[in-house]
Image 1 (tube, rainbow, N blue to C red):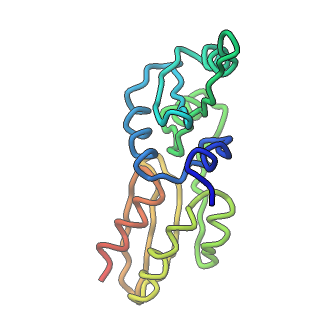
Image 2: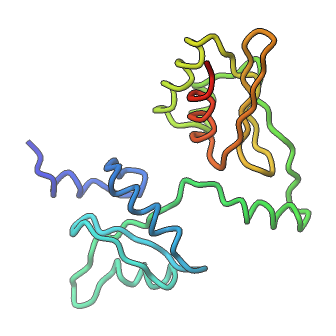
Length: 173
């Protein structure tokens, strides 16, 4: 049987961390970071640390006097809307709503990173209630989901696709 320490040694990237309490704490810490700062997690000690930049994090990974810590860079799964706005305003990218309609495929949405596999329960619950997902698009306001049941249609918008889907599931009857 593996001990916790042996289990955590297998963590190479932030996405390998499965502990929801650790991820929640990381989300709160990420919001407080200044521009250019990097958040890292030590799976050895179970603690977070803030570094001034990527270079400082790499230096800490190497350690001094042969005492290197296993730091894992915390990466946000949130969409950076400010970055998207800057790219659109600069003319680098054009925001065209991408629609997943009629042919909405949950597996396809997971494969492309649009949704997480744990969100399937919300899609199934919507179908159980008789609702079909018409559109799931990225707009300037965030992620927008349009669900339809017969002639009745409802729209929900939120900053993350998971939250938009949860909101639709809660309010659909």
